Length: 170
Image (cartoon, rainbow, N blue to C red; front, side, top):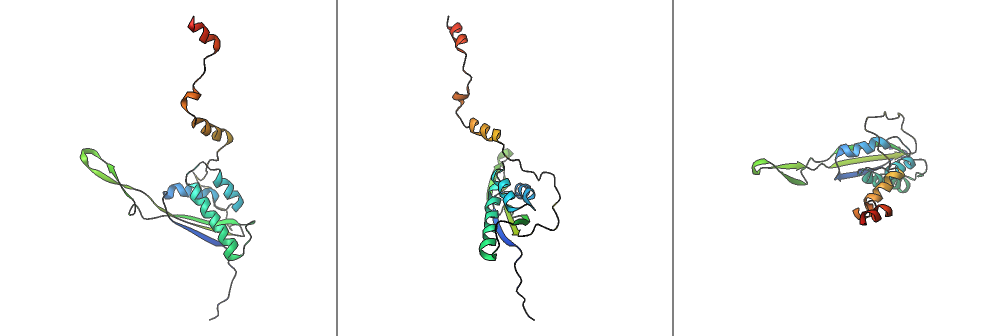
């Protein structure tokens, strides 16, 4: 039995025990599945979703694995495979939720395992569009509104016109 050395076709990175629920991560994963790495990074950087940050870090790790371990060029890489699986269902982080008549119930703080693979060829089959797979990119007006809402309430109050203020004092 001879072992034939074959070139690696994809580089893989894993994220275990992410403290984000799998449904939130799947929404982001569905949006970048099958896209080029450059396009996926842009989507993840400007996505207005909390779950995009850990997937962006994982994508950067997979690209670094491809460059350093498998001698692939980072220019023409594609997200060939991305899976989001549920982790342990609340066995690690137990939180209590108060209930009626002095009772308590456990909250299920969900964890996730994410696997991402990048390769030089796009996937053979384009992924079908799923409902909810879109992640909204923050537009310029949304970013400006977010900055404006962070200002104190006193500066947002409408100023009275000078004529109206003078008429009121007479």
